[in-house]
Image 1 (spheres, one colour):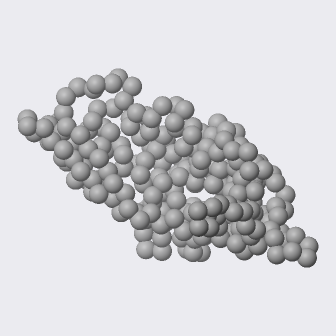
Image 2: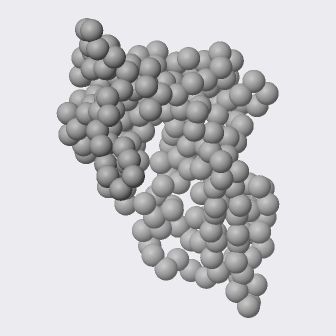
Image 3: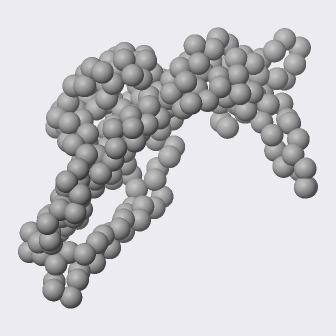
Length: 232
């Protein structure tokens, strides 16, 4: 797909940039790939850079044969990989790109260390891939955001949400004595995750331990056990 897009872009050069802060349309189409791969590709047993989602790309040409626009639809992202990986596989590339320390300011922003083993969601399988330079890939991803026209605030929001997922995976719960009700076993991870998502930590914990569910036409609050919280 990447090669086809590069070929089509090279033979159908469009007009000049409309916005100096963004890349040309051709650049944007090509640079969408590193951004998509960072969040949608991962190491599997058979492939170090396996796409874990489907995508359908439409490229539109004007009457002159020049590129006019493009759009991408994504399908069936393997969401379960975020919380669980096989021993010989790895979570999505973006987590390890951030932890590469190529942009140290991200570690401070996300309240994280550069040790993947500090985070449960990303350390169940492999944490490095010989054929992938996570430092270089982070710079490619970050540059792709710029070419695609993301503002600095939007970029930081994306990174913050990624960091929030890492902290979220470290949240611990325990069962209340003489009850089948879960309660937090410490709040440090929840506090960090909620902060990065712009949420109140107490509300996040309440939403997990006592979610509101719709029964008929009304909403009621129900209690959850430890296993239910972890799988919710």
